[in-house]
Image (tube, rainbow, N blue to C red; front, side, top):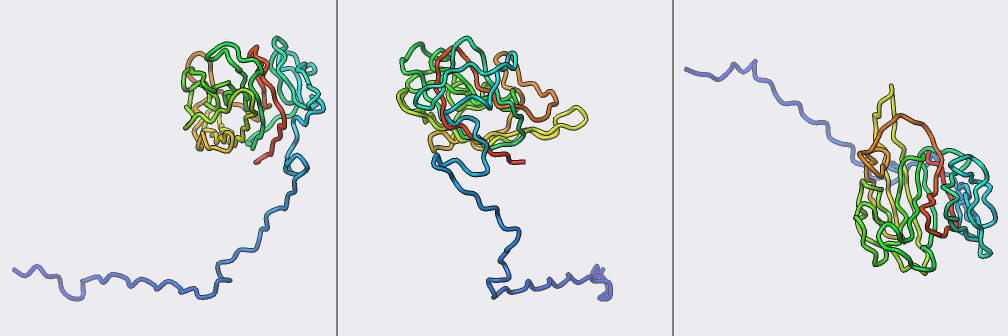
Length: 244
C-alpha cells in the first residue's frame, strides 16, 4: 500500500522573506525624542531634583506624629542629627516612584550592639523601609542590617564604612500598583551603598513590618520618612528626583 499523498495535496513550506540588509548606519539612528539636558550645582545636585535637605533648614520636613515643625538638630557644619525622643520626621510633599540620594553617618560615639547601634531608617510612602544601621563590625539579623529592605531582602554585600565616615545611599524606588482594592504589581528597590550595588531591583513584598508578614493595603503616593530610633544618626545632602 502506497501511503504517499498525491502530489497536488502536498503543502510546501512558505519561503521566508529575506531580511532587508542595512548598509547605511543612519537607518538605525533615532534622533527624537531628545533627552532633556540637566545640570548640576556646586553640591553636585541635579537641576531636576528637589533638595529635601541642604543644610540650612528643615522647611521640607514635618513631625510624623503631629505634623508640627520637625525638631531634629541642625548643626553648624550643615548636617542634621536625629534628636532622640522627638519622633520620626517626614516630607511635606508626597511622592510616587523616585530616585533618592542621601548621606548619613553613625553616631560619633559607638554605643550598643545589633539593632541598638546607629539605628534609623528611610521609609518610602511611609510603608517601605531601607534600613539605616551602623553595620560596621556589628552583627545583627541579616535582613535587618544596613541597606536591607527591612525583614524582606538581605543586601548582596555589607559595604558599611566605619562610624567616623559618611555613608551614601542611592535608591531607586518603583511604587506598587493597585486596582479595585488589590495589588496588581509589586514595587521594587534598587540600592547602591557607597557606590556598590547591594539590592538589585528586588521585589517589595509589602509593608516592612517589625512583627508579622508584609501587608498590601491599597494606597497612593506618600512621604519620605526618616526614623527616630533613639540613636543620634547624622544626615546631609538629601535630594530626590520624581520618576513619574
